[in-house]
Image (cartoon, rainbow, N blue to C red; front, top):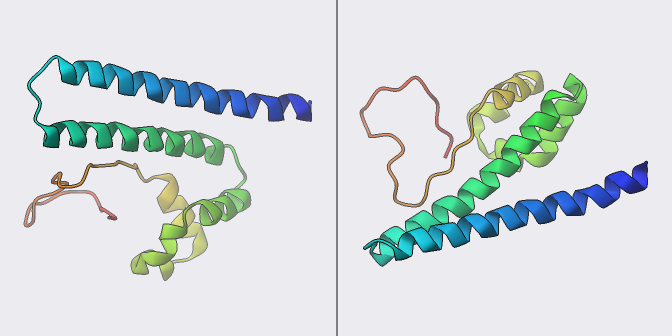
Length: 128
């Protein structure tokens, strides 16, 4: 049974990589049909590369939801080293940080894209 699980993992990664390559080929075809300047082409390619990494985070979240609270907290700490760099979170109890992270929605934006305008109001916290 363990051997089968180990053998399935590389296959899933290969499928994910094939899907990414297919998306990039489709994007390149899409870009060839229009009058996109090189800057916009680059932004679109970067967005899809980051979107690909966001799907990894979604798969991780699914696994984390099925773990016990203790394992979830330890796993989040091991996966997300950026947490230690957020001063407001580094001073909070571990249980709170775990709960907050489990309810965060990850999003990736290409460089130069406006996430929120200075002075505007929002009901979200952004960690950049």
